[in-house]
Structures are given as C-alpha cells and as structure tokens.
Image (cartoon, rainbow, N blue to C red; front, side):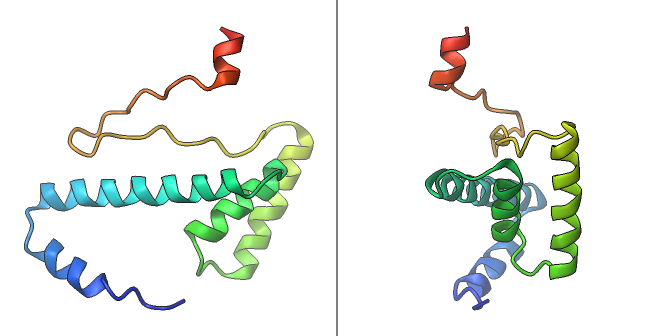
Length: 114
C-alpha cells in the first residue's frame, strides 16, 4: 500500500490540537471512511452477505493477514449457514460534535413496511 502523501500534514495538525479536537477529527475521519466503503459496497453490485462482509473487511483492514481473513470468512459462513447471522449492518452515523447517533432516513423498503 502506498503511503498517504498528506499523512505528515495531518499528523502535524493533530499534534497542535486539543484532545477534544483530535477526538472530533478522529470521529469525522472514521465516519467518512465508513461511508466511503459502504458506498463502494453499494456500487459493487449483488453480493451475498458473507461476500459483503469480506468486501468491507478488505477495504477497512487492507493489511489484515490472510489467515485471519480466512478465519473470519469461515466463521461468518458457518454463522450464516446456521441462520444466526444475516449479514453486515450499515452503521448509524454519529455527530462529530456530540457523539450522538444521527437518525437514519427511511429507505424506500422501510417506508413501504411502515
């Protein structure tokens, strides 16, 4: 994986911030990263629940050892086959300023069920 050219600038900026400001930036970057990988999953097309989870894991943890990934794959497949796991759930966004959960808008499918 290529080093991010902006990493040094970000680290210098973070070092000059208060702990609360660093925490807000961290939450914001995490939320943006999660939104990005879920958007990529949406554009990836039709995947089964286990494949969706592996797609997300591969993007969130690109340096994960292959053996660990395979262990996760086996466990998720076993749980899915047993009916105890249905697939990854999109996280509810959090407000960077307060840490409170942001209400998700109803999807078309959820609106039809109401």
